[in-house]
Length: 122
Image 1 (cartoon, rainbow, N blue to C red):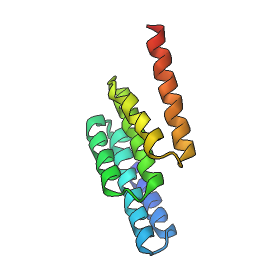
Image 2: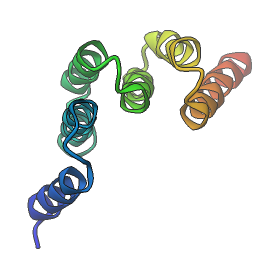
Image 3: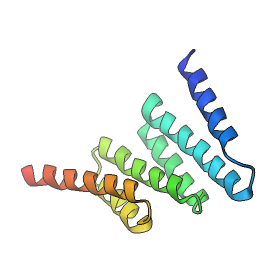
Image 4: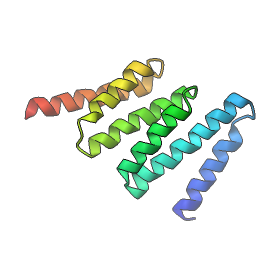
């Protein structure tokens, strides 16, 4: 099976697993948008376009907190890969805006600590 086929199958299974309530529909749409942005980031390697897709997701799906937190984290990861200082602000936004998303906040804190270490070594 091709990569596209695997991604399509995984997205279909994810959609099938979520119930049909309006909140679930929003969550489902947010998950699909996240998968699309991650594909652009990780497979296509278009970090700037991925950043825009992640930002749109955070703005469009504020009630899908877990997905929005992941998107905000990925904004920081993209900025970091591009060598931009905006990464620190993106990670701080994860910590400040999504405190209930403990695992994602922990990752953002780790990335901030790593960036601080790199600056100290310069």
